[in-house]
Image (cartoon, rainbow, N blue to C red):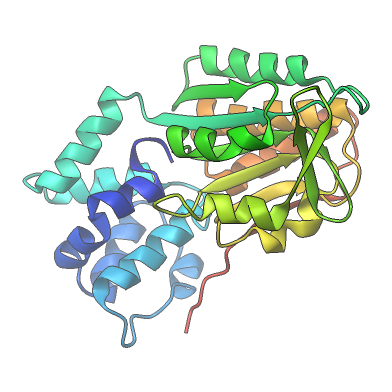
Length: 291
């Protein structure tokens, strides 16, 4: 995320560039060790085998983006590679763009509170996001919010925003539906399978989907692939708990500049500070094939 999001690296052809600059496993491990990777983490890296070097680098970047290394992320990787090869135009444009954009993290918040259902504290959650976005941190958090998202809005909002994170705040059902809105405030159910189909229209898989709804994590498996990581609750998620998770998660991403995996832990910690149970919270991500 930030200036060197996984989607940006893919769009800019960075995996191929890194494969040219660091073609062997030994060179990859040396670069990662210089960033602070521990020996135990390096041992767990996939091997090249018969993979093209660009595919190998894609898998390495997926691991980094999913939080395998606590001390650095994709931004630091690109910066280190650029430091080794300052004349590389692709890396220079990416690092210059990251500085100019303040290492932007784009969040699309799709809120839905059908008037026929129990009302949620959506304004409070939106206020929390705005407060975090206003603070100076490691990343510039930009938040685009649709406060009353209809089913017809979903595709256009996601394609227009090309976000790093899609955050759904609303009602979810135990049978795998998210409840958006219809014209007169009625509930407009959308299955998670349909949402996954929308996400797959994006040029690259969505880095992170946050389901601030009841039962969101119980159907995370049906969304993985369309999104590389999914965060949510297996059961009912009370409004105050959802708000504190949002506060901790985005504070870690924007102010701390952490990975989404570490940000999830920060969200849990924030919930615990306020006395909320985190037993049923889950973070799922696309597993890596290390064969």
